[in-house]
Length: 157
Image (cartoon, rainbow, N blue to C red; front, side):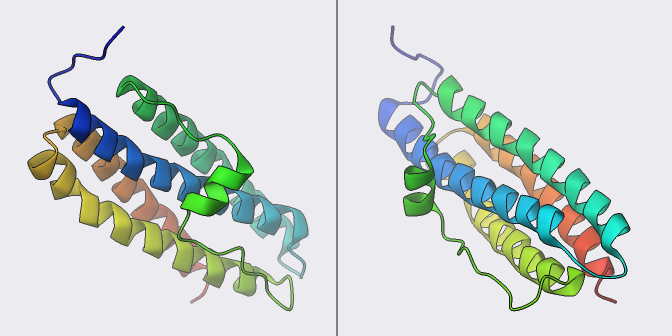
């Protein structure tokens, strides 16, 4: 059955392609946040361990929502590690030490990178592709990432 939601096939494909990249970025960030949760060391271990847990749980919800948005456009969401690594613009960077400051600085940078990508696509989705729903959807993600980055940055002061 065809998808007839008022957005032409080409534009739905373009939006789905951008959302697939976002999904990959979110999955890599989720994995890096899990890594921080599992491997952080230091005198602040417990509080930061719990903090990272709250962050990866929120990212898990983003991942599911993005995949469902792709499906609502009539496309399949990428769902393999290989696909995510090919689509993401983030790196699997590692630190020399597993301190909270090292993990947090890296995660802030990744959140900010995603924020920039989201901001670039808000008007593009609405104006160029005629998908106000996807534009609104990523605006919400942008706001959530801004808050998460703020929480992370606050640990570095």
